[in-house]
Length: 111
Image 1 (tube, rainbow, N blue to C red):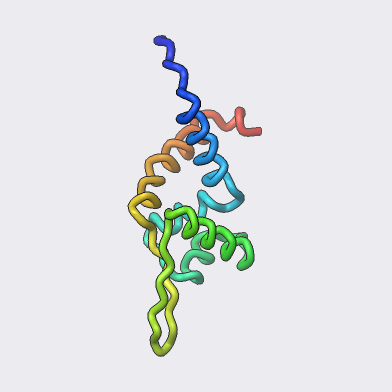
Image 2 (cartoon, rainbow, N blue to C red; image 1 turned 120 degrees about the vertical axis):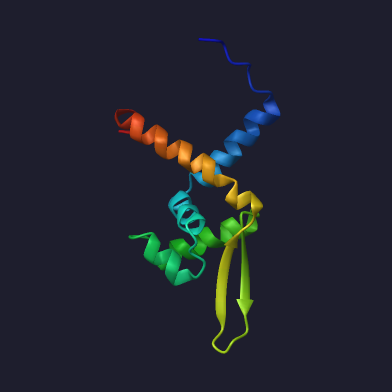
């Protein structure tokens, strides 16, 4: 097995920030639902059983604030709010896939 090069300090900090954002409660599940095409609040809530409206609202706001999602409002009638992933949000797909695969291969390490 080859030794890995140490992460430069800036990269280490970036990885830490990415994990802090993606590791927030329900963030991965919300992103997963959106990667599968859910755009409306009710669609996302249905795709993420157990999430409360308040937590979903908070996660969507955070994802928008960090540039992973965009909120758009169609004036209607009726008014329709949609959340769509940005390019950065779509780039979380392989990360979430890798985390899912790790969890499947090593369930005992997760407690």
